Length: 210
Image 1 (cartoon, one colour):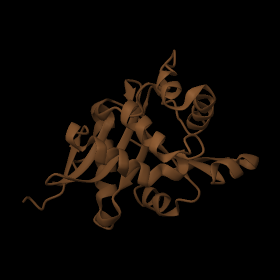
Image 2 (cartoon, one colour; image 1 turned 120 degrees about the vertical axis):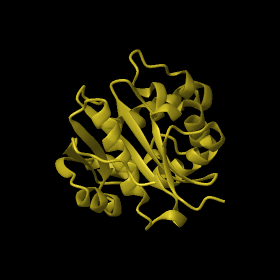
Image 3 (tube, one colour; image 1 turned 30 degrees about the horizontal axis):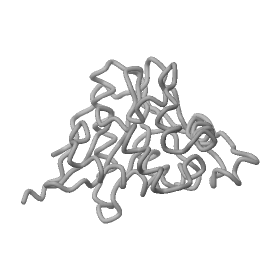
């Protein structure tokens, strides 16, 4: 078995289920306000997530980490950013009332990328694989993608309860540009603020090591 960690673009079909569980492990608390039932949340993610806008870290056949992206050409969250928006995945799974709650909750934390940016929409690393630099390597690959597409900025959001992720982004040169307080919504969201961060695209970016 190959013990080297490889960074790849795209989520292979045979790792899709593992990817859904990995993202739920990382962001389930954030998404619970919109999709409180875990089984329905997993079913929703399996249905709408697009593997074309994902970067993965793999070792052999094991998924170790994943990074979702959004830009003017598409998002890993599928059609949620589309205009007109297609509500059918929500209604089919949740019914009309649940679909309204999900749509409002997910759009609260959704970012529509500007034409000059690549938006990093979540970095997830398996618990057993943390401390191996996987998050940094995934972000380095995102930098390469942004450079190849001629974009000027990498942007991301992090919630205030995820200090570990914010510290990583700061070490990699991201700076805080905005803090959006949840106010009374904190009782619903479970976090107090969304912190927006950015860094310019590095024209001398090099590939993440294999």
